[in-house]
Amino acid sequence: MRTSPTGRLGRARLVVVGLIAGLGTALVPALAPTAPTAGAQVGGSSNAAVGTAFYTPPAELPAEPGAVIRTEPMPFFPSVPDLAGGALPAEAQRIMYRSTGAAGGPIAVTGTYLQPKTPWAGPGPRPLAVVTPGTQGQGDQCAPSRSMTVGLAAQTDPPSLAAGYSVIDALPLINEGFAVVVTDYAGLGTPGHHPYINRDSQGRAALDAARAALRLPGTDLAPDSKTVVTGYSQGGGAAAAMGELQPTYAPEIDLVGIAAGAPPSAMIDTLARVDGGLLTGAVGYAINGIEEIHPHTRPAFDRLLNDEGRRMVQVTAGQCVAETALTYGLWRTSAFTRDGRPLSEAVQSEPEIMRILDGYDLGTVAPQAPAMVIIGRNDDVVPHHTAVDLARQWCTQGTPVELRTTEVPAVAPGLVVDHAIPMITEALTGARYLKDRVLGLPAPSSCGTL
Image 1 (tube, rainbow, N blue to C red):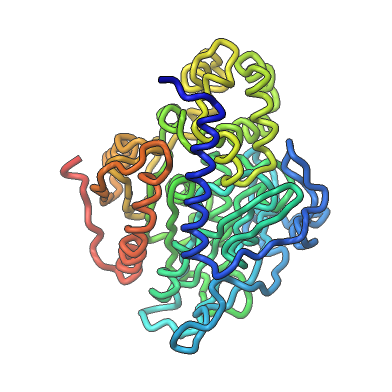
Image 2 (image 1 turned 180 degrees about the vertical axis):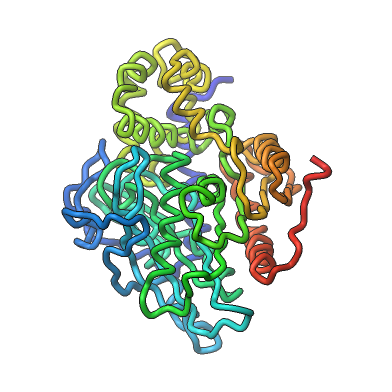
């Protein structure tokens, strides 16, 4: 029996409310609303500052990638005292730094730096961990440096809810002794559309976050501090991209380990997998980013998309992932195309779009640092076989790769649960893997069995 759009939306709302409630229980004691966004609009990522002028870049940017533009202290969840009478074991500050955009020019990117309060007990200077966040959305209000201050950030104009779930990656690393920097990526908080899952943009934003952290005054990092990167989902792809770009874009960074969880490494396969699931609307983020960086593709997308598809692209531009799931969760992308084909098929009739999407794929070059690739057997967002293929491609180019498949039975296909479970269950696994790389232990490898 075919499910009506109204029925799909009702089911999606129930699931998203449940997921948000679960995150809220885990991350925050209360939902703290924020002031309405100045200049916010449905149908476009606002270029205005979100709640503070901090996110507005200066008229002139520094020439050097990774240069620190400005910093300010920030609260960070969880900052309430724990049962032992302490608080978050790190001091947080919001940072803005210079990076290189997807189009190749200088841009400003924001993020969060976390300085542990306890001394580093290992050899050498304190190591640095870069956290590359999972899908946040495309509105400026979705920047992790905002949502991580309260755990859940809500606003009413437009209605929006952003979960600061990057703490799931950050806290285990702080507990292992790492200083942590979390990038907001290009276009989240700062001007322009966020170029969602763009390999070059994400990799550079992560590498320049590391550069900025290593230059911050008042830390116990050193210019040669050993550096690692970890992320899941979109963040897994960004972590992988950071590893692939580091040898040529930032060779001075001593990158010693990568933990890439559920990395979207083959765009067409991932687009086909999310179709009809809770994250269907995320395709709007990707289209907005492509059209901003490559405006000549607009006629090609106009040939593919019908009025509903164009509306989806416009609406998602100002949303965080929760409201995108509420709006377009469980839709089929065939509802957005002129000829009724799924988008994963329709885009293959447009060579220029395919050329761009091929450039988003991972695996054509390999990191010089060892890597762990984590993927659930029944991941309903990133196909298991694509992560295996990425590990195999890196192995053939000489990178030691440990492939960790989480053998969890399918719980709720299409509802992101099967994608999210390994993010929780393997968070400590990734942190310990990275700590071992800093300590110089031999990197385990699955390369002989792939």
